[in-house]
Amino acid sequence: MNMNKWVSNVRFSRNIRHIQHLNIRLYSDSAVRVRFAPSPTGQLHLGGFRTALYNYLFAKSKGGKYILRIEDTDQTRVVDGAVEQLQEDLKWLGIEFDEEPIKNGPYGPYIQSERLENYQRRTQQLLSSGHAYKCYCTEKRLELLRRDALRTRTIPRYDNKCRSLDDEDLSHYEGKKYCIRFKLNESDGFFNDLVYGRSTRNVAAVEGDPIILKSDGFPTYHLANVVDDHDMKITHVLRGVEWQPSTSKHILLYRAFGWNPPYFAHLPLLINKDGTKLSKRQNDTTIKAYRQKGIYPEALLNFVISCGGGFVQNKETNNVYIKPLPELISKFDISLINSNSCQVPLDKLGYFNQAQLKIELNTDSGRKRTIEKLKNIVKNKFSNNESVELDLSENHLNQILKWSINRITNINELINENYKFIWLKPSESAIKSMDYDIDIIIKIKNHLINIDDFTIDNLGTVLKEFSKSNNIVYSNLMKMLRNIISGLKQGPGVSEIMEILGKEEVIARLNKACLKG
Image 1 (cartoon, helix red, strand yellow):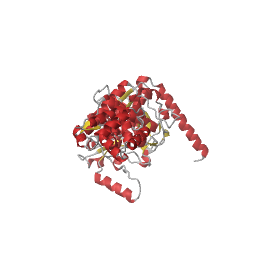
Image 2: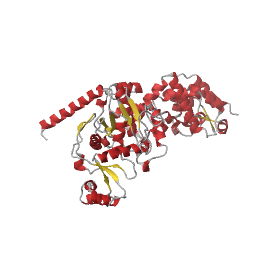
Image 3: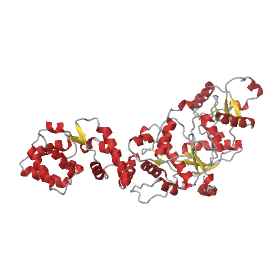
Image 4: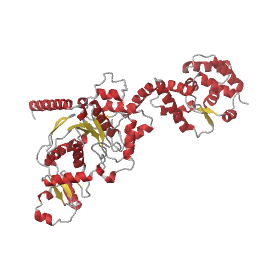
């Protein structure tokens, strides 16, 4: 292709994309209808959530309707409880539907396995119009075709054998099992992608006729999604780019039915830092896993949109901003979605979570929620440890949160091994069993009461001067204080422990040790 022709094609694609964006605006707000149509085959993961979120943002930015449809036609892969978990995860993220299996609506049912009669009726329509045919090929024959393709190093494809069966041939198959295939024609299946621009693919040249209704009476994805999108009056389909090669096939199905197809927008791949595709098999990228890790829903929302576009980029790329869902809706622009694969820097999610944590701690209600949440986390972690007392006073929790806000990205980090001393007060029995000089503890407690600068650097100096002026070996003093204040043999330095706990708490713990007897 010469350069002038390439430039011409690029301009044409851009013009087509611009025209389609104008077409979106021609819809009245109430006419826009989009759907999220997951298969209930497991946990909702980051990629599925991205699709659900962008459909939601687009629908709500246009004042349209958002529909949840469950595509469970492959019954062998259905996981019990997957639908309920998916709905729970999305609700936690603030995403709710206008029409769904629970709420129902004017175009239900919204579960495909409950719509089988409709698919069979539509398939009969295609058979009657000559756009489909019965295929009697056995799995054994299809396997032979696949093996032959591998042997000749060609792409496996059905050879359309049953398309040309005459009446005499068909009489030999009477009573035998069959599926229904759709006749692909040489049309290019042209469509305009709202993300990628002009797209065209002559599927008949590279594929055999696809199955649209299986022998068990269940439809394949190709038939079911086309029929459902038409019957549910879907105006825009936003889905992963992996479906883009099939869209031309779907366009041909729409033409065969005599229907106008919706607009299509394909979302780019999510990839890991090493360039590999973000996979459903990465269990740590499920929404449930993020919830269990203590990630805020607002953090996850903003993290995902930072990867895929759809918004005017903030020039201060080093800063992390958290925008509430209503603001994301108002600022969403489908024309700004990236068309390149999107790298997902999972290690940056913590920064978004820290930003939301700061927002929470900046309001009275948010701080109260965080304190209560932290209290429950600590209880669940340490409540079985009978040898220590937990300090869960509101004052202590509040002080720890203030100290930690720039040090942690997730409050779950505060129960890590290194921070045990924050919560574990040595019990009376543990203190009584310790070997230390009460007079020294009383003396250092009285000395610390007069210290205003309770920082690591100053405390380090104070403790060294105290050990020197009182003829106490410094290491012995540190061991004594560590045991009394934290009850732990290892961890951060004593000065850091004292700064974290704060002057009031340190004095309280030393007072307790002074009562030994």
